[in-house]
Length: 68
Image 1 (cartoon, one colour):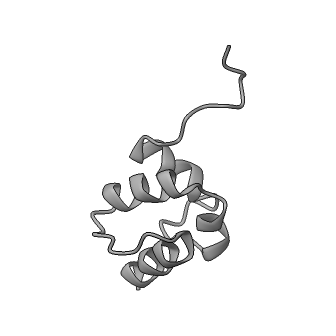
Image 2 (tube, rainbow, N blue to C red):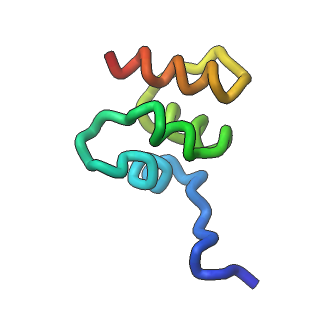
C-alpha cells in the first residue's frame, strides 16, 4: 500500500519540481540536501549535468557548480 505522501521523485521532472521549492530555476544547497542520491541523479540527468561523483555531498557540489 502506498501512502499519499510517498510519491516517487525519481522521475527527473518530478525531482526538479520537488527540489526547486522557490520556483526560481536555481537550486540551493538546502534544496538539494533534502533529496536522496537517486533523486539527485535524476535531477542531474534532467539538467543535462554529467556527474562524476558518487557521494551525496560531491554530487550536490557538482550540481551547484553547473548552475553557476
